[in-house]
Length: 484
Image 1 (cartoon, one colour):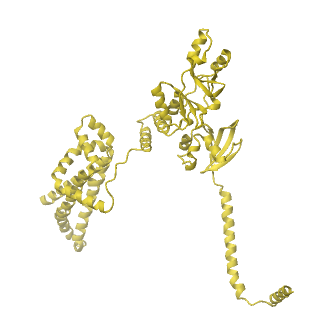
Image 2: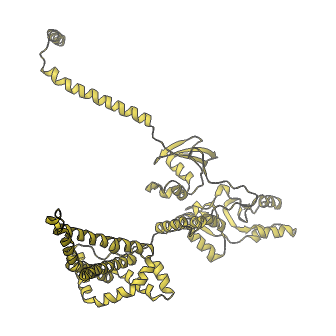
């Protein structure tokens, strides 16, 4: 019995050793390198060792594989023989089981060892490693590094052999893929669901990533909505324009917005008004900052930081002013709309009770894509528009009128309101297939197919049957008419 107990203990130790190797492998592979780097920067030597193994896993994985292979060989060679013999001896006392005692005992021992190996040697250790990969990777890293040094000759041989085989297969070492914006978004979304981040934080991060893909033309105030001051206007007219606006910056032009003299801050003009002095636009104007409409929003933000000017005029390729962009426009793209005091906020996206969406024509096209499942826009049209209104104009190919509609990619677009020539409101709804029409088409197709099959079956019978007298006479009559 002592020998049986020793063999059971030996098998359990082998299974546990296999579990440690499996847990170490899973922990190092699943551990986040950013988290390990953070722990290593704090002075954690174990985390630094785990980070080294994560960056160069060839030696570590070879060591793990050597350990698992040795455990398997020892378990197969030494494990279970005595237990199977004792179990077979006990079964042989039962007359019904005596003829099959050796096979049954061996099968039971194999099943028992396999069960223990799967549960204690694979599944439970790997589940533990997935629950806390960084902590376990840091805990096992020193011992695994020591084993790698002990087995270094064999590890080098296995590593070289693996490299040769991979080269022969044309599969060299793959470059480490950088973290993409989509992966960061997914991580933040998971963190929000887990309560680690606020929804507002997630929204801001997604908006920052979105800002990198936007052009300034998607953020600017369009030319038709830009309030500008004419240097030739009277002081009374200037006061009326300034007092009737909530903006803090105004372009100063002469005669036309394209003839820009500069930009002026409303606060400086207000000082002159309070002091009873006449408004001198030319004197108060600052040098304007011009940016092309194709410039990225982040580059405009960098210009604002470098120049200290927080307003820029957006021009097209011909030098005409297309609109005005301010620092506030960029901040709103990050944190969301910030309506001015006393000005009612009008949402750009409204979900209706029937499931459709009432959208503002100025809604950026990337926000529209996110709203409807990140749909890809047509490749040849991507540079033609930055807003939903531009997309509608491009698809229709003309200036639309109210009630104009079209379908695209499973969505129905209907122009609900026009502001002169500008698309103001668009109703978007998912297209639902007409099942009744589909059923009628299917029935019609089946009926046509049935008629064709009947005709095909009737043709051979007509060809093989002899002509009747009436048919012959009819044929002769037709022939006579042809001869005539």
